[in-house]
Image (cartoon, rainbow, N blue to C red; front, side, top):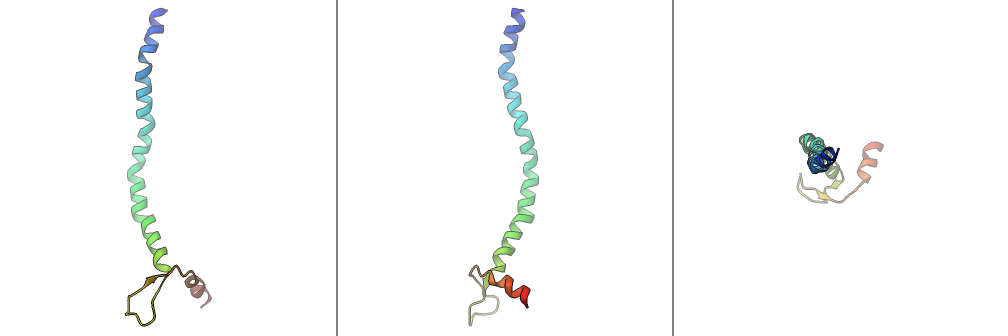
Length: 80
């Protein structure tokens, strides 16, 4: 009985180490998918949202826009 008791204490750190590795594994497996989602979905949507609130200054050349956070653009688009 003493042998089993001593063995249980000796293997406890090994079990904790394995549990730590096991608890990190799902997150490491999710990492490539999360990078893909951020790179190909979240960043383009953020860029689109940023571009949609820009305005063209008076007298500016074609293609020149300034970030003005003008949310009135949405009302103009839906009311026209």
